[in-house]
Amino acid sequence: MGQSDSHQPDLDWSQVRETVKLLTVSVSQVESNMHVGDESVTTLTDSFTGIVEHMTAINELLNTLEPSDTKTLALSHCQQTSDKIQTSIIAFQFYDRLQQSLSHVIGSLKGLSEIIESPERLYNPMEWKKFQDEIRKRYTMESEKVMFDAILKGKTVEEAIKLATLTDELDDEIELF
Image (cartoon, rainbow, N blue to C red; front, side):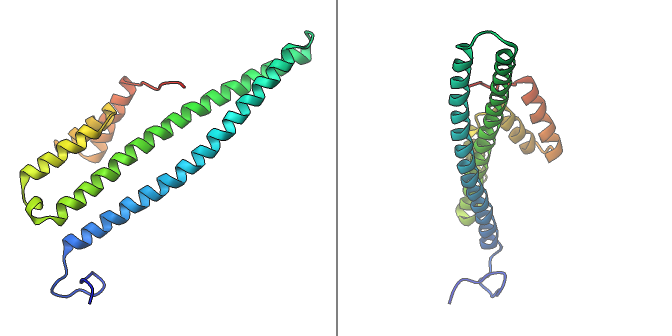
């Protein structure tokens, strides 16, 4: 006979076990969607690489032509396309940042499951403090640290997001490829 669950509870039923199951579902969903997203971004990256190669070839061909209005117009379109590619690359950087943040969420949910499953750790404030310190150390973006600190200080989700957004605006460090 299997463990008791919320569908067929008995005296062995545990809200801790149910919580861990739900945390595990959340981790699975995030990891699965991140994997699908990675595949899509890889496809897009390959496509943009091909586009850049073709644009370079077109640009080189155009530069061998005699000056004309058509050549000028075509070179202008090449430049506009290059600008759009650059904008797309910046969007990929935001996606990378999202992936990084979701990876931190996954790690936090897994760690939370581990603490909740262990009665020795669950009721030990020092274990929770150690876990919180581990979570914070994983953060690489200042906005993540600001949001984390705000929540631990009792701020609401909305307040924490506002503080993190302000930090992002002040510390806007998007690196171009």
